[in-house]
Image 1 (cartoon, rainbow over the protein chains, first blue to last red):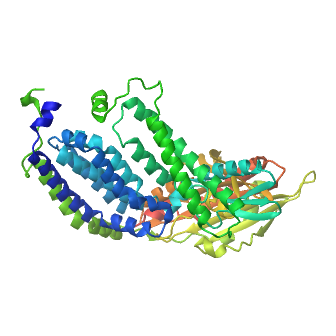
Image 2 (image 1 turned 30 degrees about the horizontal axis):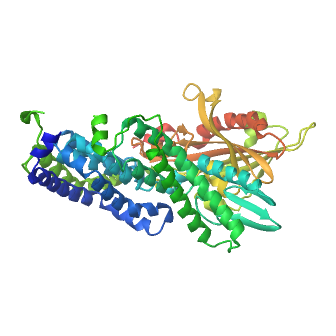
Image 3 (image 1 turned 60 degrees about the vertical axis):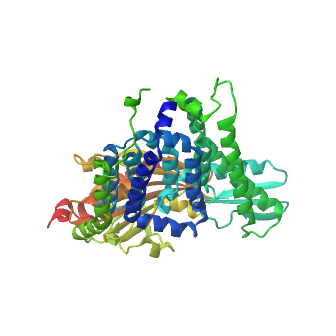
Length: 304
Length: 247
C-alpha cells in the first residue's frame, strides 16, 4: 500500500477527476428536471430541508476520506458503463410506460455510480457508497407514497406519545386520526396543529445524520454492521422524541396553538439527540469490538 | 507489492469506457426524455365508458341481501372530491330480531380518463378524517362465481376507530379487469402497455359497530357483500377484455 502511494502522481489524480467532471456535467444535463425539482422543493417543504446540507455533507465525507479515496483510484472499467445504461433504462422506463416520478429521480444513483466506476474504478465506488447513499436519501419520496408508507410509524409514535403524556400529573390525552389532543389543568390544546406528517417528520433528516456520522470514519465491518443495524431504531426513536418534546413544549410553554416555535425547538433538539445517539453507537468502546483500529488506515487494512 | 502488479489509473483521456459513457450520456441528455415522452403520447391509452351506470347498481340482486335489508343512498359531503361522476354509495341497514341495527356501506367509483390519478385508499384518507388505524392486513376472498379466472382475490382489510364508532373496511381495485389491493399495484397495472382502453375502479365496503364491539364480527358480512357484488360488477358494468383491447 505504501509503495502504491509513492507511485501516485498528480496526473493519476487529474485524469479521473476531469473524466468525472465531464460525465457529471452530462449527467447533470440529463437529470436537470430532477435537480431543479428538488431544489425548488427544498425552499418550500421543511420536511426535506436536510437536502440543503447534503452537498456539504458529501463534500465533507470526501474530504474526510480523501487519503483513502486517492489511494483507491484505479483504472476504470466497462462495468461502469453498464451501471450508466441501467440508470438510463430505469429513467426511460419510469417515463414510459411506468410513469413514476420517484423512480425517475432515483435513476440518478446508478448513473452516478457508473460514472465513478468508469473514472476511478471499483474501490472508489466502494468508498463512495455513503456519499451515494446521502444523495439517494436527499431525493424526496412522493407525498402520496410517503403518506402510505408512514401509517404504522406515525400511528405508533402518536400512540406512544399519548401514553407517556397520560402519565404526567393532571394531563389527559385523546387521539383522533393524526391529532393528539390534551387537557392539562382544565386547559385544552392540540399538539402539532395543522402540520403535515406530524407524527412522522424528519425521518429522512435523521437518516442523513446517521449515514454521515457512521461513515465519517472508515470503520471495521463489525462496528459498521452494528451501527447500520441500529440506524432504523434510532431514527424512529428520534422521531418519537421529536413529537414528545414538541408536545411538552406546547403543553408547558403557553405559546399560541399555531406557533411554529415548539416545532423548531423540538426539531432542533431531536436532531441533536440523533447526532448524539449515532455518535455513541459509532464511538462507544465496547468489549464487543476488541482491538479496534486507531486510524482509518488500520481500519482499511482490517476490512481488506 | 511489486511495481508491475499495481493497477495504475488511466493516464489517457480517451479510454474506451469513458468515450462510451460520454457518447451514451450525451445522446441520452438530448434524446431520451423527448423520445420517451413522444412514445408515451403515441401509445396513450384512451378512455372507455362503463357498460351500465353505477347508479343503477341494485344490491337487492345479491342473494344474501335480497331480504331483510334496507338500502338508501349514502349522502357524503365529499362527493365532489371523488374525481368522478360515476360512483355508487349505498348504505345497507338491517334490524335483526335478536340484536342491534347492522350498518354497512357499499362504495364503488369508476374512472376512465387516462389522466385520472388513482385515489387515496381508506388507510391513508380515513386518518385525515380523524380515524385511527387499529389493524391493517391483506386477506384472501374466495369468489366461486368468478372461477376459473379469479376464484381467489386478495383484498385489503382495515379496522378503524374514531371517537364514535369502530369501522371494518375491505377494499380493492379493479384495473382493466385485473384485481389489485394497493394503490401502487393499481398504478403499476394501469401503466402496463397492451390495452388500447383504460379504466379502473375502487370498491370499498364498510361495516359500522359501536365502540364497545369488535368490528371484525362484520367480516363475514362484508365478505359476502363483496363475493356477491364483484361478479355482477365485472360481468355487467365494467368493460370486457375484448372491449379493452379492441383496436
